[in-house]
Image 1 (cartoon, rainbow, N blue to C red):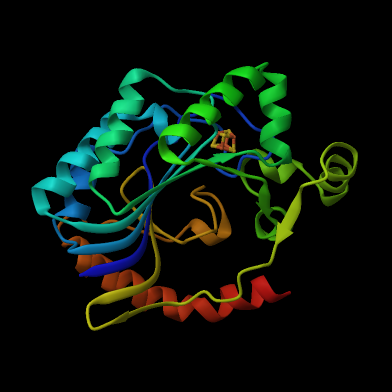
Image 2 (image 1 turned 30 degrees about the horizontal axis):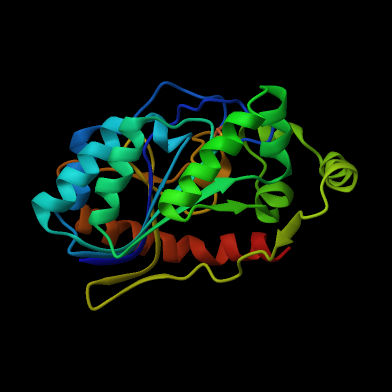
Length: 260
Ligand code: SF4
């Protein structure tokens, strides 16, 4: 099976605790080798593999495992994306990123720098550190700053600590502090289908190895992320097939909520 976009939550641990975090309180939870092995042994090609968290660079073991599994199963990956908050960097991390880079045509790093992350990083007094790390990531891997914020998260799907933010507060923070902030449009296309063994759309795997809904958070108590699929007796591709069938049934409900 081939997958267009595969997102993996490699950890739910983080170096900071943003007020707007959609993942809830940080947890010392990392994805395990078995879950990663189950994914990679069943996939031939991934167009974009996105590693996220929590703070994905905390989980060096997962980076090592992923590099090993890509090689072991000879998985073709056109693009690997990493979303980091920029607070950590070390020689080991640089080494792992260099190794990861060899396993794909394109490694893309994004250092989140929207209004809320900046606010939080200032609180933790990590501004200089993040700046230094960003400059290094930029030099070595062409990392970019992400100044955008997806408004779907904040107007429709407030979860985790983010549920305590209201739109007035968001507007106030936007107005007073940063001018480069912009909302990105609500994604209307929740396409997810399988055509000739190609999964078109996004498949997300959370830190527990469950297949979960894209863009709707990984928090279990939330209405739209209660759906998770992880039958260890089934291959990853068979699990995806079941997930996609179910997703398509629920898709019209999700679309209605997005479009309200
Ligand atoms: S928003 Fe990102 S950087 Fe902030 S606490 Fe959550 S996972 Fe960590």
